[in-house]
Amino acid sequence: MGKIAFVFPGQGAQYVGMAKDIVDQYPAAAEVFDQASEKLGYDMRELVFEGPEEKLKITQNTQPAILTASWAIYKAIETSGVAPDCTAGLSLGEFTAHVLAGSLGFADAVALVEKRGKFMQEEVPEGVGGMTAVIALDEETVENVCKEVADTGYVACANYNCPGQIVISGEIAALAAAGEILAEKGAKRVIPLKVSAPFHCKLLKGAGEKLSKELDAIDISDMVIPVYANVTGEKVTSKEDIKRLLVDQVSNTVKWTNTIRNMIADGVDTFIEIGPGKVLSGLIKKTDRGVTIMNVENSDALETVLEYLKAV
Image: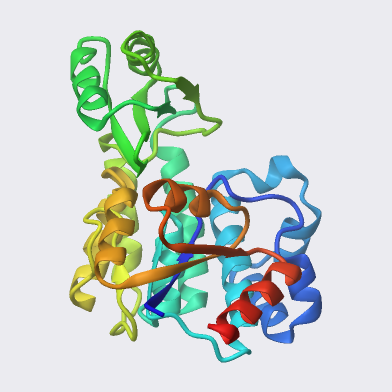
């Protein structure tokens, strides 16, 4: 067996009730929710387990909620003694990966991502920007179309999620213009996403600058296992690079396809997605069908994964 990677989801994976059955069964997971509630000053159980959905999907609530749920699930896995060889996370999930790697403490991280969500939401007024998923077109075509509509407004590639799935981000008029041309050029689908801001593009540079000031006040430690960064797709080489990479991530392209390919090249053959949903599992499968992909978002899935890992 090759290396095992634990990967963590980002914003959009959330749902009311995520991680509840694991929290009910594992004291270590329940403690995570207690820590989050204490740090943030509100009842994280109530937000995550009761909602309502409209409250949970507010960005500054969503980000700490997903991090808390994902970390709680990990703590349940940890009780079995299973440990990964490396880790990564999509966008917000990169913060969870750093908690796993020991470079960020959980309490610091959950407070940090709450502020991150607030900064990202406030940077561009709602209705000004957005994001659109482009299905079944190559990278060069999508990049060229973004340049082609520059006179309409700003739009750029925000996420290279997997082969055939690219997300563009920018101003509403430019997104619409790009979407029409991309459809004409053969995109199988052009899907406006239900997000309230244009994430991972230069329109959010100011949010990254605010996040940088918050990171200045946080102690960052050496990583105990490798973390792969979104903005490079490569291993973070030292703790001195962590702050810069997390700040740059807010307003730069997420290179998830390259991240997965580099992890596989470094010997990973088993990916365990930890947290709500199965988005990352789908993206990894489309990147390389030869690897083993599993996800843990509830107690049944946890038992399945643990049994598999003990057997191999």
